[in-house]
Image (cartoon, rainbow, N blue to C red):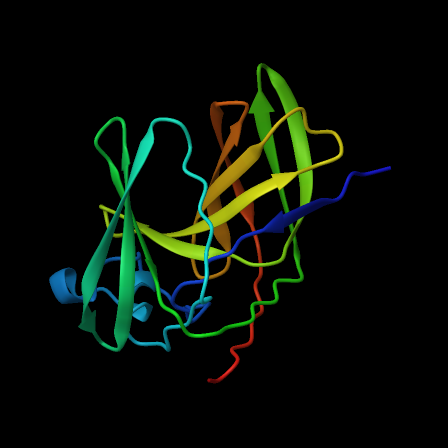
Length: 187
């Protein structure tokens, strides 16, 4: 019997227009019409509370960011031990996210392979310094897990992701795919 994994994430950031093309560049700088551009062109939504687990080796910095294209809220900056930064944007508007497709990906931990079938209840978008839009899939427990597992994936128009899984402190990478559906609750 396959184990069923359940993910709970408490932050939702700007809703993206899934299916948009481009390489994910920043429109203001290089003229691309990629995924990051959609962050400034679609409605910004978010939960009014959040909880964030920071992996070992990261620190978190809370800060405000200016209003830009109706993107108004605050930002969390996670600084990795190697100097890389992750900026997490969120606002205080209410939103309900429904992601009902199964995300499957394989992770290798200590030389062993694991394949997880994951039901995502919610998600959040984060952005790295290289201006790629990212999907943070949060933290979950599975019946056959020996510990906490986290995953981060690159959002590519709702199609492919580079998934990094943190399993008992070990990072692994795999390519996977996911298809999202969502609905926004108006204030």
